[in-house]
Length: 169
Image 1: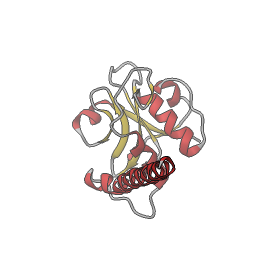
Image 2 (image 1 turned 180 degrees about the vertical axis):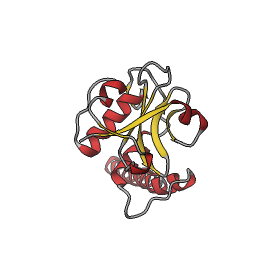
Image 3 (image 1 turned 135 degrees about the horizontal axis):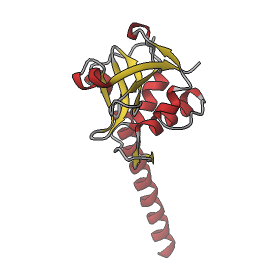
């Protein structure tokens, strides 16, 4: 009888584990980064650099935390450093103004490419914010009020504080 109970319990746990795993896989498959971007006005096609979009998507809705560097909270420069490390295998150091010093400036917004860096002077004196350009004016960044989000350079707020763009050579 004890042997039958152990066998039954093993089958039950195996089935439970299988269905939990199946539920997790189903949940993962229901998350669709392309659909997310489409809902936010960004059409991704085969010409786009999908690793950039996938990694940015992995950080979406992470709350802002000054000097934070994890999914529990992250600031703008740490977000850029994490994404660049993961997809470009580049180690960037320092604040947004220090990262700016490492770039080749892009003065013409029409020349922006996916992965280029956008710099903002929100306090007017120095570069204090950074984002990664996606396409069609959209960029990903960690906002103090929204956490990791997508915004557009055409929004009045970002037009007002936009300083320049840069590309890591």
